Amino acid sequence: MANPLMAVSYPRKNSLNNVSSLPYDFQRVARVLLERDCSKHTLIALASDIRHFLEFYSKQNGEVFSFKRAVARDVISFRDGMKVVGLKPGSINRRLVNVRLFFRQAQRMGIIQQNPAEGVRQLQMQPLAPKSLTPFEARRLLREVEIRGNQRDLLVVNLMLLAGLRASEVIGLTVEDVELSERKGTLHIRNAKGNKNRDVPANAQLRECLTKYVERYKPQGQLIVGQRGPIVQLALNQIVGKYANKAGVKCTPHQLRHSFATAYMLCNPGDIVGLSQTLGHSSTQTSARYCMNRLADLQERVEAVNF
Image (cartoon, rainbow, N blue to C red):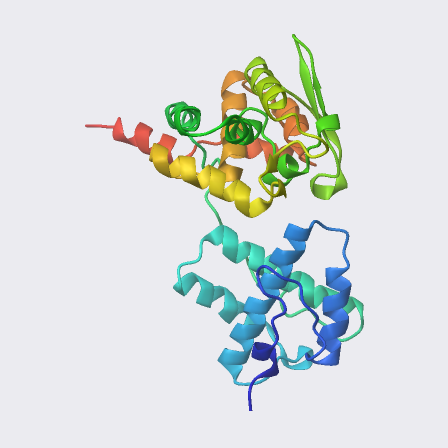
């Protein structure tokens, strides 16, 4: 008989479908988790991570998942299996956090007495700054956009590279969210990650880009638009990917945000509070990782060691 867990599309990576064909206890826990006040992207990641664990559990044990039969060994094997297939430590740890949350919710609801994931250790990670573009790579990327692209694409890249916006924040910007004058500019970011609002300064280069874009396209409502209306995440990814490929650099929209943060710390050494305010981080500890060296920086410095 087909495994009911495998037959249901929940929780696939790009959807949050109903869970009506899964065991009742699971339905109860899943619905509570998916009603949390989180961004859509967070819920999608949560659903995807739980799905991976359920599929691993079923394949490993040859049985339908049951809260009553899940033990710490299942979670440990899940962690070790991810290591074997080569998942990055950050991805493994995120899945473990969400699996722990999954069981914790079942514990709160009285379905289980103990959380089998509670004592399972995450992988230790080397503290490094997030991957970002070097100034040389960033210039190459911008040059390709200027040569091959249009004012809209240039603005999309610059909003992340010069202001550190998240992709979702670029998509959500409206014309009313932008205030420009000759000497200063402000981007009003509303309902961002964690339902937070913040104001982000726009430097002279970004102000010029914004002014040219508005004069050229005269947008109404949403700031960034395409041929069929407001831009969506897939289109934004394709824009960045297209020019990154032409420039010969590896880059995602979020790495443009990392590149801004890295450049900010180089220009303003020690100003973690200012960076945290600009990026919209809840804690300065999150921003502090940009004070770390990147792996590429360490490689360059190690190469200089000779005897």
